Image 1 (tube, rainbow, N blue to C red):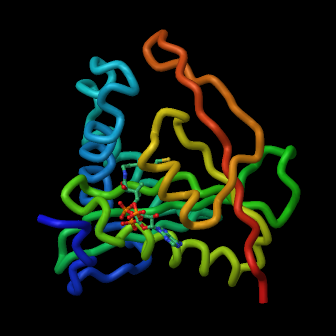
Image 2: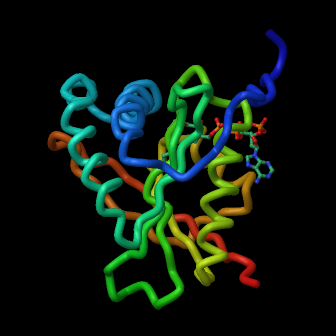
Length: 181
Ligand SMILES: CC(C)(COP(=O)(O)OP(=O)(O)OC[C@H]1O[C@@H](n2cnc3c(N)ncnc32)[C@H](O)[C@@H]1OP(=O)(O)O)[C@@H](O)C(=O)NCCC(=O)NCCS
């Protein structure tokens, strides 16, 4: 194969429904295992549980509150998702949102699906009046950082250490200003 394939035309991006919880949980675990191998301890990746994620996602989709979740749906198979939220930390002024998650099944990487999910999530935030959005990404996640930077996101200077099974791992905060109507 030469170069990235275009997104499969059958893929639609839509708001998630409670029945998507299992598909989302599957992608979440598969994507973590593939993207973070070598970045976070393997034992932690081995322990990830689709069932545990399913419980969390089912609850979130039943009671979304200020969260929004979009899925990429390939004829009934969930192949990716993105989630946003209004952060409750007073550090963030009103009008700030967080992109909490964006994960694709590994066989869908680099085919333009992430870009579609991102566009939909940002359009939703801008439409609801958010002016700024931030996210955290592992500093070692080069694929993720390249994707964000191509979309106009920039590091805002904040870094923090996460503790994965006793291993300290750095993540960086990125920010994007949104054009509001
Ligand atoms: C990170 C991830 C969501 C990106 O999605 P993707 O579908 O693979 O990415 P896309 O194919 O949409 O985008 C990649 C290409 O489009 C470009 N691109 C993306 N958005 C763009 C934009 N708004 N404008 C211009 N170019 C853009 C990127 O530069 C890249 O091009 P290149 O690598 O050929 O130079 C996906 O790879 C993934 O799930 N990775 C594993 C999980 C992960 O790390 N998630 C992030 C956690 S913080």
